[in-house]
Image (cartoon, rainbow, N blue to C red; front, side, top):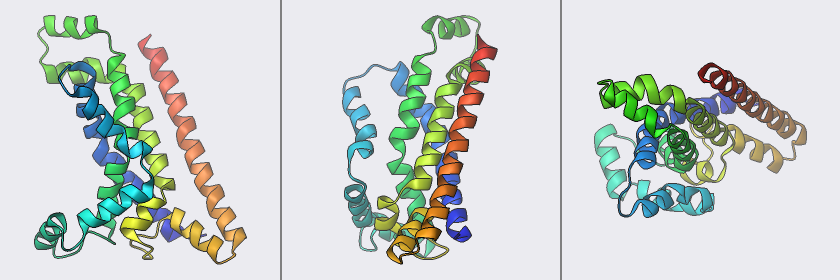
Amino acid sequence: MDWTALWLSMRLAGWTVFILLPVSVFVGRFLAYRRFRGKGLVEALVMLPLVLPPTVLGFYLLVAFGRNSPVGELWHSLFGSQLVFSFQGLVVASILFNLPFAIQPAQRGFEAVPVEVREAAACCGMSPLRSLWRVELPLAWPGLMTAMVLTFAHTLGEFGIVLMVGGSIPGETKTIAIAIYDRVQGFDDQGAATMSAVLVAISLVAITVTYALSARVGRRLS
């Protein structure tokens, strides 16, 4: 069992969820409540990573993050290191690749909040921020929780993006999915099976806890 690779994957998933949580709240809420020209195109762009092959998106990110690219040069000038083949690069790639998993469930959660409830909060003198915190977030919480769990589980198992952008550097970019692939390539079926079982168990526990908490929140709000 490659515990270093597992811990790296957990860190990557944790950072991805931490950064995408506020993004999913504000972008999901905006798309749920606003009507504007080009909204369909924006929603399509958000969902694009879901239908693109990971290697295609990984290739474009590899080019965009390269040392000779504007993004790569800016990153190197600010931090003195390259963005590709680094943990930081994996985090940025993971955030972009998980946008549909984070934003769409959050959007559906906010769309489920009745308009009358939001109007009542406004009539009571609540500011938009206070209404978001006290009224909308508790009602949209199941959607947000689903978004975060899907993002976490999907990040743990991601292979193509990680391999293209990060490679397989032990302790830096070698995640559990890459470690499983390496074990299979080395004909270590038992090691690959053990790590796969651990990954399945973690994902199953995360999804089970999400369903349980969502049901509990639903009963409390009903």
